[in-house]
Image (cartoon, rainbow, N blue to C red; front, side):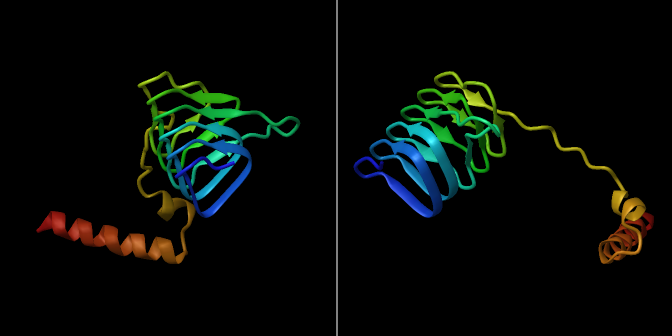
Length: 140
């Protein structure tokens, strides 16, 4: 059910979901078993993870909340009034009103992994050339 002046955009799938007035689910999203309040923005590639393999669970996104792109909302969970979720987060606990939920691992880069684990591939050849060029620049 879509409220007045709400939007469900391109490549959005909804099942058993209510969207409040002026809320937007613009694109690339699955919203299942959810209640989305008023004035909410759901970022691209958000998934309402509602099925645990046995049962369906409900997600609530309350008024004025902002869900960042590529967020997984693992039900049952609530994003409270005016709360945000950081892009790329997997939200498994309720986000309090006015807070931001950040649930993602810190990036770490494993140097020369491709050279060790994918030797002989096109990716490894490109990486070798780039690394050789970087080494030459250091020596100059």
